[in-house]
Length: 143
Image 1: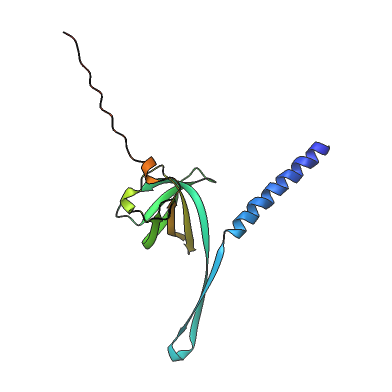
Image 2: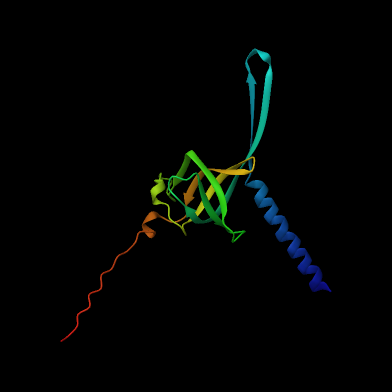
């Protein structure tokens, strides 16, 4: 009986830790716009969220990139814009052409309606660890 109570308490503690971590990762931004002398104003609220995952699909020229997150094995589609930045672990800017499937990344995104728009992608490993290493094997046959 005491083991069941302990397991329930540990499970509740783990759930609280996950919820707290998610809540602390969010940054709220509120934008208020007033139009001219008519006094019309609009207010929008967005939350900046962080995530980690692995790139599954990136096609140059498209407007989206797919990640397999740690929480889900199904790839999730995120949209990017011209202002989306890609950084290496040291904080240096990386070109889009350097992205490849199976690269682990951290990313920051904003949910706009039903779309998730990425503002920043940070590679978790240096680019040098992704470079292809070519080797040449020569086979000779004896007559």
